[in-house]
Length: 328
Image 1 (spheres, rainbow, N blue to C red):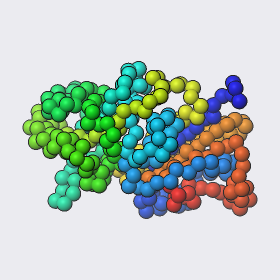
Image 2: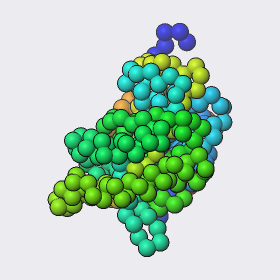
Image 3: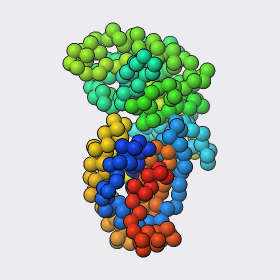
Image 4: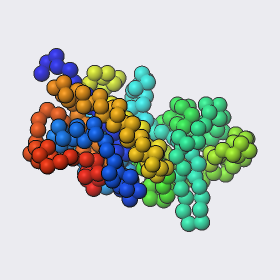
C-alpha cells in the first residue's frame, strides 16, 4: 500500500552446498533463529537450476530484483554486472558493453587447471595498478579499453563483450577452469590474451617480489559480468527500491575453500545476527523476506502468510536448512 515501508529482505548466497562435507556439518547443528523464520514464513518462489549454470542462483536472484535483464527468462551468463557497477558508482555506461577483468592465479596441473580465488590473492592497489599497466597495451590491441576498479578487479569496455555469456567468478573460483571457459568464436581473442598474459606476467617484477615473499603470483585473468545494460535500466540505483535485499556474502570464502568447519561456524554467526534481526521484524508483524541460495537453486520465503507446509511444520517439528539441502 502507498507509504508502506518495503519489506526487509535477507538474501544469503552459499546457504547450502552439494558437497557431502557441507551436509555432514549441518547434521544436528542448531540454527534456532533460521528455523523459527522458516516455520513462520511461506515459500513464495523457487528458482530452480543446476550447479553447471554460468550464473549462480544468488546472482540470478539479484538480477531479477534489480531488473538487469529485458528478458523474463534471461539466458544463462548474460547479466551485465560490470555495467551495473558503473551505475552504482555514479557513472553512465551508456549502451556500451562492459566486463570485469579479474587478475588471478591459475594452478596448472598435468591434466587440468584450477582457478584459485582472486580475493585470496590480497593484491595491493599498487601491485594491481602495476600489473594493469603491463597488460593494458595487449588488451588495447584487441580493441579492449581497460581501467582500474579495485585491487582484485579491473573494468573493461569492448564490443567483444556484447552478447557474450560468461561464468561468474563465484562459479569458477576453486574449480577446474575447463568447464567454464567461453568456447565460442567470439571469445577467441580472450583465450589468446589469456595465453599471452601467462607468458608476460611470468617475468613481472611484481610477481618476483610476491614469490619471494611466499605469496601467490598473478599469471592470468578471468572475464565475467559481461554485456550492456538492457533498455530502461535506471541511471542510478534506487536506494529505497521495494524488495531490495540485504545481501550477506559471509559464507562465500569458506564455501569456495571447502572449509566446512569455518562455513558452519559462519552460519552460526549469521543465525545469531542477521537471522535474529529478521526474526524480530517478523515477530513485530512487519513484512519480511528471506532468500536462501545454494549452488543450483534459490528459494524465497515471505512472512505475509502462513502456508499449508508451514502449518504441518509447526505441528510436527522444525523446518531446517538440513531438510532444504536437496532443494538448494
